[in-house]
Length: 244
Image (cartoon, rainbow, N blue to C red; front, side, top):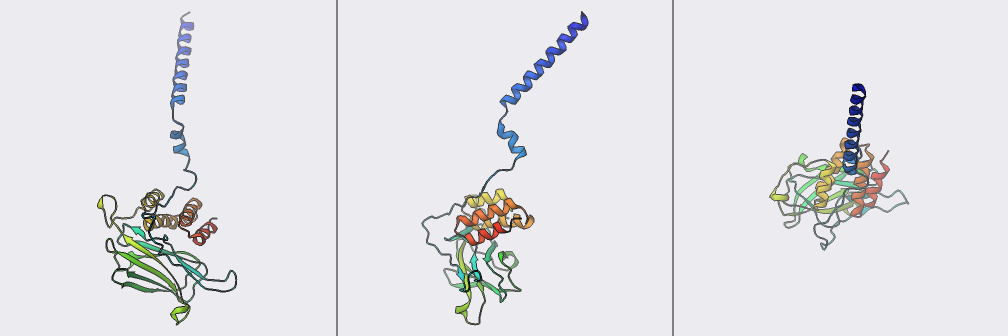
């Protein structure tokens, strides 16, 4: 009898534990378990232009030739003036075909028309998206100053035959008045920068993440989506083609 009583107590305890476990599972939030095991699906980055009514200032360039043989060059910039909170951000451009005759990068302060950078890059530029790191130069962007930056594919000694693309950049203060901050090169940071209208910082954060993981298809797709949002469809298509 004592043995049967003890057995009854043990069974009751097991049933009670099972009921508690079931109640805990019922009350648990589904998102809590998914967050630990699944990455977010779909595009996360959404660029919000700081001034929707601003005039378009981006200019793209290209050559004429047989279908599929044209060289086009484009700056990776929004149609309107793009923003950064960095003193020395990275600038990106795209060329559709190999540029063998030289690439020149120039930066001009818009208000004074003063050239602050004019540099010819060594070597050839393979097709794709390329960075130009201002931190490798002495150039530092002044606060609240508009700069026109341009990329020129040198085709001839005659400047009119060269291919020129240009865009605008302005350095602004970050949230809380921060300036000269260190860029956070993560996807989450890129999402925050894009939502805050900081085009160049979003592009750099995402591109540096891709540089660290060049075969990450999700990162490539995110950058392709970001480029397409500002009409840079050719560069976006190249990013998608690089997904292996």
